[in-house]
Image (cartoon, rainbow, N blue to C red; front, side):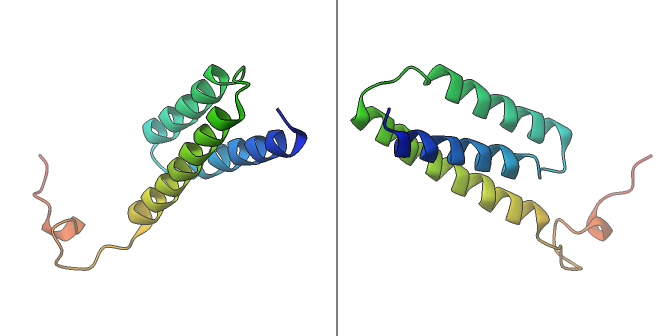
Length: 92
């Protein structure tokens, strides 16, 4: 793997882990971190530049998905919306 390609992959790996650690729910956070680590470990011996580029492109799309998901989960709920805590049935 070329030095610039290696640096790009490591930057992407770190960015994905960094973003995934912002999930507030423990289960989401641990699942995302585990999947990222497993995927990068699984593909660490890939030598074909075309395949590496395809994997990098997939990882960039996945990073975008993680970032969008974090924004969605962080989006404030408007009073009266279906997801608003005031509109949830009382437990107990």
